Image (cartoon, rainbow, N blue to C red; front, side, top):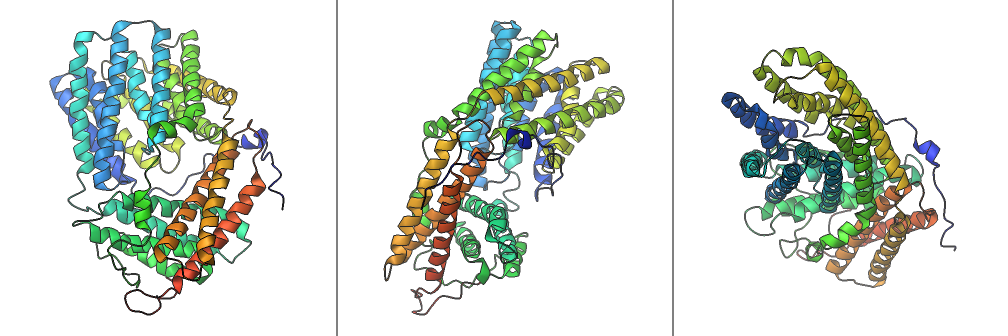
Length: 564
């Protein structure tokens, strides 16, 4: 059989379609958590500065306060580490910006430094998978700080304000832990169960290829659940909860591998039971000889690639960010706009995993920002009645931005834009018309120039990464197939091989989707991808069937039927 005939995929013209770009999605299950956290982190420092008559310092406290937006999907032990790193990263970027601002007022130099900072922030956030809001908040703060007049003597005090607000943001982010200590891992497990139920319910209603997106979403949710659970301690007080959730994730894996033998309603019932703080439902699986499930040790032993290796594939994206942000800032300067960092931040917010997604984000950004400018025109008269109202309006918009952004990026931008405009008035009211004009022009300039830079800087490594992902999936399938060919394979080895194959197939689908969105790279081996996925999922199903009839080590009988 031929390895494949490469195909070129969809033409760039079709990828410029606006269909679905502005469509609203269902809100996130925890949309109110980042929204409330943002208000709780921003309000006390701003109100304190208001009482002291020093709202002009709010930019520095907001640098720390906005760190509360991160890591809401992580278990609290992992969240504590992530938030600490975000605060340090925020203060580091702010420090570079303030030192630069104190040494030069050359706008070209400031834009160049801002673009380089944006590229570094983008690469690090993507490599560490810090999650939303990613690099955008970091870039917004550091870019704005570059254009604030500064002296070296003021920098320690300003950084201290950011650090103090960052500590408060850390406390806000960790505040729910005593009330619902297992909330993040329960949510991740419920999402995996619901995604598996959706695939199982759709299976059999059409060709298998029609359900490939649902299957890919299911495996991605399962992998996310595993990453969440494996961030928890395997011993101690929380170990029992972790192991109970692991068994539910295994049942989601079983459903994805053998959907015809799955009862979707039972999966949904388990997911619903996890929404509260009640007892975790039992699957009926016989416990293993140890507290750890088979194969989990293999996943724990697999260390993530070093940071430098994860940064390597992101080089084209970092180059796009640096070039696009720099050119957007220079274009704004050429037009005589007083705040080129708005254009710079607009460009920085565009860059996604591939060019097609970047185009979608550019449309969303322009629509949301222009609508936000109109909202600012309606809000500004009220906010100008007093500084207290100015702060309250910003807090309301802060809540609205985080509450709406999960529906669609453009909808959240409708609130982010007037909030950013009002923040510029903390040091003194400005002409509303001038602010609106400058923001609208910078938005359009940043989006156009930023997108053109993304078109120019191609990602020629995308095809090679697909080839590597196909090879990795084939090797994982061969390993599992060799074990299945044995009369009595070791259960732990078979379980580890099955999980390895599931992870490889998930990575293959994500890599193929990302590469398909690039326009100018070499043709992708679509046929090889399809064949690798088909054979891999057949092997997964066979592994599930073999495990479903293996002898129960505890009772000497067979385990329960594969149906959850």
